[in-house]
Image 1 (cartoon, rainbow, N blue to C red):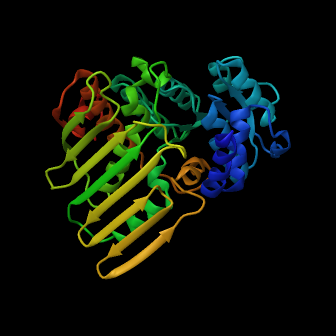
Image 2: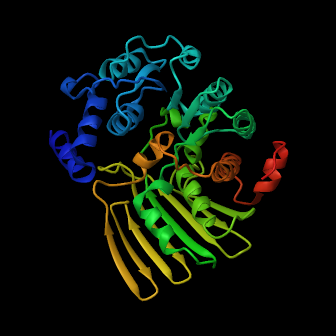
Length: 376
């Protein structure tokens, strides 16, 4: 009873009224019908995967920033599809994912399905000239990554079909402010991400081998953030990787990844999941490059030192970058896709290390791209 009351109140303090109500509606699947957004005049968006994230985050942000333009949706879970369609007033949901992609009225496809399906859906949609917003991870195997990267280049050459990635931390207010503070700095950086994650039962779908482990499901976020930050002043090709885990039976839980580059950059990512965090995933990010030092507390606040200058930033509602990431298709500004390619290949290499039980390795982006028949 306490959690049923305390959690919504806590979420109100963190996310504000709108996001909290949408989270409740997504959990209850049919409650808060009065919150249903009215259809926009132009409807051209299809959603593949109608789970909690699509309902509470993608739907909430798109309806707020671009209007309720959802015209189609699909999920193999009939209840998830029906409740999403009912809430977002989708008139005739697709019978299959392929049917949604082939729908001529759909111009933009949001892919928020299970991880192993992301690449196939994105490649299929790009081939038909659709714009694609693909949630993370964009691929869970190197073979998938090769097909997707080739499809992106083919779409670009044809001048139709753009792709946007669902890695959101680079779009957060804290990271964007930190990037501005680091302009002109060229020295090696140090980055530490301490992440308190959800406790996942053995039956959770993230655990299925084909879904890429928690490295693709969770740790990939901070690998991507590291690649993004490294590319502010350099584009490292070589990464020296060391992995430690607390339990050999669950190598992707309670583990650390350390990454170093020849330039002297040092990145450490720690994922701990020893108890369920009441407020959801909690992150502490520490950063230094030259005379810039930053401490980001759960993307709700940041203390930033730049030489002798000191600044305090507060972010309310909490901003992990979801809004700017999800609204990329509606803005002229978009993230450099080559960053996503590099972070994806690095993530897949680390995931393979975890699966194989390897503790140390050296990875080069250029070599991985060559295996895929592409240039870095």
